[in-house]
Length: 405
Picture 1 (spheres, helix red, strand yellow):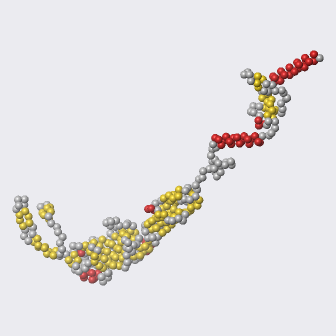
Picture 2 (tube, helix red, strand yellow):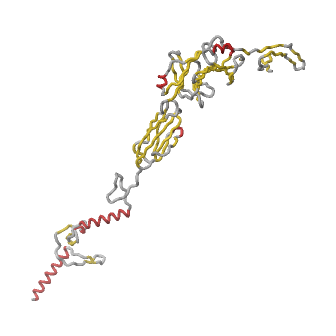
């Protein structure tokens, strides 16, 4: 028992029946007392057979408690129930209601509303099932649920009237406590929509393929090829994969972009995407992989627009020698006279004349004389002074000889 504001309290769960009870109490000194005998009768069981008999004249209904079908002739006012309406391809549920607040003179009604095909067409689907529920004031507190006998992928909440329903797309997948209604839940062989209130719901198949936009690769690229793409779907993307040059498919985890290695030359790539309904689409691209080669040295210079590498020192020396030889072969093979500082010399070819020497038609015949340098070395060749001195000596010798004669 619990004590609260001067009173003791005890709560127990009891089934229907009559119960007898007394209360005992004692103080801290050990004094005690007891109340007189009291009686209580619990009567929650009600017979709802007549209600179901009338309800089933227009509908096929059943009463469920904790997942099990129960007898409507033995219902409890202390428990919550679900009223199922069995419809072709669907089960409409007025769930989690209590008979204690139910209006037994009001009967829910389930029907087929006017089709909302246009709403499905715009959403990339095809309507399969639709239901309309008039609760008609039977209960005010309940959970509205429609369970379809197929795992559909596109759902709508219907409002307005059965003759002119307005369709609103349900895009939320239900969380664990169904707190994001309206929402949908998918099962292995079924699908359900959870609403905030009735009036209707519709479900259909997804007929639209995923949309793929392939950005890269395209044109010419290097061997490291970036796969950049985007994919979307009206219901949901399930998986993505690709095939490079017709090889086996490779899964793209989480449909993310990636990088692959292409082959030199022409390549092809195909990106595939599947949606949750099994619809598939693909995008194709052809591209060229160009791998730059190291430039080759050649006598004709660089080719293909690539700059030739700088020659090594030894290679440069050899090229200079070759060019010198090439120029020598092109020089005229004519003995050439040239003079400098009064000295005239003959050279084998015009190309052999040193810089600073002036070419002349010929040099006069002279006798080579060797002059002693300040250091004692002898140098060859005649200067103009040598020639004049030699002339005076020759003339003196000639005059002396004549006198003797």
